[in-house]
Every structure is written in structure tokens, then in C-alpha cells.
Image 1 (cartoon, helix red, strand yellow):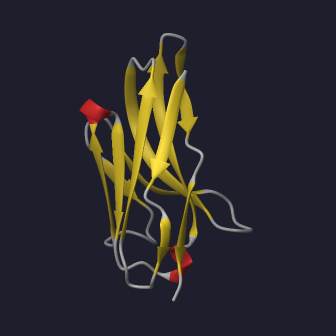
Image 2: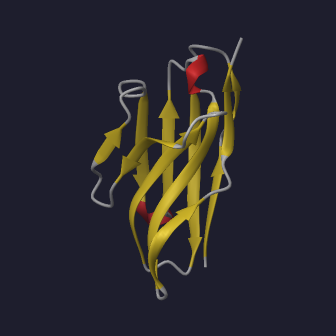
Length: 119
């Protein structure tokens, strides 16, 4: 069993910053990619940023240049630093962990953390 827990969401004014954290725990043999997705009301869940076990990162065009994803492999933790936030960044942010356990490999999701950008 793998548990994924996010933290760091909240209410922030336009132009502000937030740092999201996500920690994976459990009977993990290996983690490949870790990433952040978001889902706004009435919209589909979309990829925000992703980082592989080797440190290769990718970003959605909408957040490129404003966000930085980083990872601490020793702690099975991934972070998302978001700057210059805009109202359109408002969404529930979900952490995704591609992990292998002794039962096999699959995606694991956190419960989500709300980010609201509003004045």
C-alpha cells in the first residue's frame, strides 16, 4: 500500500507564490516519475509539471517560467513552487506518483489540495 499526501495549498492573491509538497510512503520498492496535476471546476484534470527519477522535468505551457518542480528522492517527496500566480491557476492540485511495490507498478494519487488565487 502506498500513501500519497499533499500539503501547501491555500488562498493567495494574484501575483503571489505558493509551494506545494507531496510525500509518498508505504511499501515502495522504486518511484519513477512524480508529478502534479490540477483540475478546475468544469474542466478535465491536466498535467502541471512532472519530474522523472533522473531529474528530467516537463511543464504545461501555462505554467512554464512561473513554476519549478523539484524532488527529494531520499524522502520520496516532490515539490511545486508556483510564482506569479494568476486567477486561472485556481484548481485542486493532485500529486501523482508512479511507484513500484512488490505487488507491481501503478499510479498513486493524493487526495488533492485546493489552490485559490483571488484578491
